[in-house]
Image 1: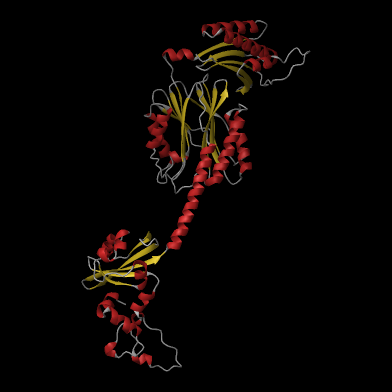
Image 2: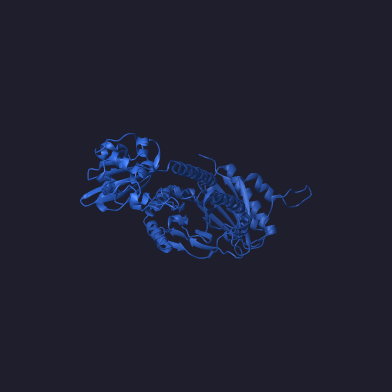
Length: 546
């Protein structure tokens, strides 16, 4: 069927009449919509033949189809035909007028440039789900119709309002679910980062774009006492509310386990078993690191996570590649701890894969790009964090969550350096150890110009901790005093791994009061095992604000 030839041969009223006539049509009246008289006179006991496509009453078919149909001709798109459904939707049209005047609704939804494109290319085009001025949504298919030098476009519009509304309801539901997951995710992340004395820290969390379900990225900063700080970053595999919920449980567990002050690999060992119990079908990657300002290193353990990057004072970037175990929740693996230098003037970055992983790029290339960006990134931790995110090309429509944790160990000089001091004394044991410890502590605290009350409390705490170590520990012993701009820390280490506990001493007991005294006078106290089979017992006093 050639709609252009058919349309040109009969005026509109004659075409309709010819298509709807009840009388046989003689050869001189035969049109493409008519049935030959010879066929009409077939015996009634024979089944009527199926008409050929070219013999169908095209005009009557188009008039009755529920879809909207319009035919425009020429480069100025003059209106040649609209069907009844089209006129019902948009009212009568002005025959022969340009489409911009006769079909203003097509102009309003921006369809006229598509008609030009179809006319030039000779190829059909479809525009899905456009809302028309009548408030309903249509899918428009524009098909070229040509005859010699004459060109036209057949516009066929299908009402998809119900489908569009259902799709919009689905999208709205997905948006609500995503907003719920993002809200849950953000509420489970630390609202305010803890601020250690010796570190400056900033963090950023960016959910994936609107088309990506929120994931289970998280980070945390946990002050362990005694001047030490735990830093955590992790990523739960999966998307949506479930991943965020699992993340929240793991983050809570990390904070609980951190209070045990265990080495990083033992923390991951505990998390591994817990992750399998929370959800056997989901795994998570995680890095748990501890910074001790006395050691100038970052001790860490990794469960399938990306390597920590450290930029030293000179600008060189180190990558902490080993050791790395399998993700949490897989079981059957003994994790191990490693370390990387983090001296004064250094900057460390912990991050999730959304920052460095791209579909068209190898993961190692992404990490190498991050290293280059870190080598030139200076400023505060928040400035460094923002620069790394920008350099990675992370945008609002990024397809994965991104979490970044940046920490700096400042190099303090001038008057600021006087607020951070260290002093240590090796103790060999014996009856002279306690008097030596008291004299040493008194001299140090006097030189640090502490108030008399704090001086006396510090000497008493040092004496009790040394006495406890002499009675229950083994050599070598060491007394360490450390001051920051916020607190005084007193720590005693020895070679025995039995951790003290606070207990209530009975009136007749000759021991058991030392730790109780320390716990009473100090702001905080604690103990932990040290590498090599020993222990450290510490307490701290908050300095008065000047």
